[in-house]
Image (cartoon, rainbow, N blue to C red; front, side, top):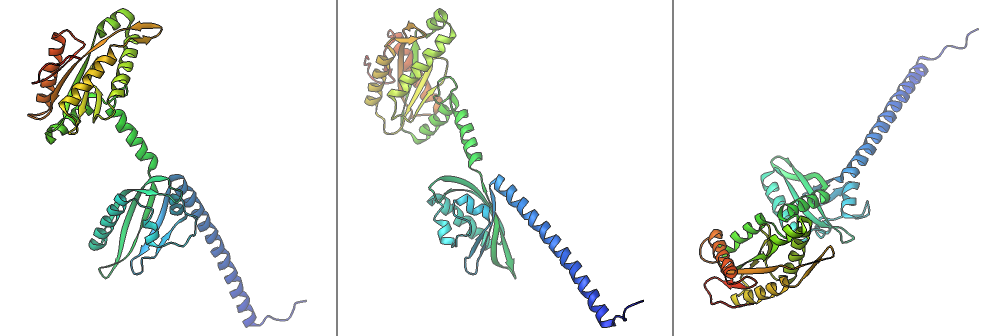
Length: 325
């Protein structure tokens, strides 16, 4: 026995409902997939320190993703204005950002900028800001892009730069760094070069071994650096040779007083591995003005060897009367 016939309108309505339900299931499934992709993106962006941002040029309204809020240490969802966001940029970074932004808007292009920011908690960070300009009818209407935390990258680069500039044995500047700074002072035409050579160091290596010699060099470096806190640069430029650069604030009399203190400090005994070691120091001083770096070094080197010829443990100044330490 069959039921009453189904009216065509009812059948059509049922089919429409089933079709709508199927479409709703597809929409829900797509929404779930989209939400999952968004969660995956957010997790990846957070791991990479990346966030997305945009700024409408009409009213300067800005919109940040969660990642950008986290970069700046601002609670997510906090109402923002461009003016408030700019407060997190130190002056130099703010000027660089405004210049790059204005140029990109005028040319309807984009830019990439590494900038320093200060978080809401006062922590300094570096970010890489990438921006694209959206234009309609040749008029810029929107800026959008990515901000990425590059603090670790900057710190690593700075650490590598410092390692490249430092002498591995003593922690002082190395010869390359010294030569760069000497060239700069020569271009400025002001300053003094002080060369220090340890007297009796070969006997330390020969008599006590290279480990003791290395310890002696480190102690000598510490003593020299401790006396030269106002110097532009203190460097180890050779085996047992050190250099001190005094900028335009230095005077010949001040350099000679420093040389005397260095000679006195190097004359004090060193305790290395339970052994008493004695070395001395000869010092040469010269002005950097008058020629290039090679000329300045040659003058200081001539003064240094004049000190050695005079009996060591003393200093000489190029072109000046002799004063003993």
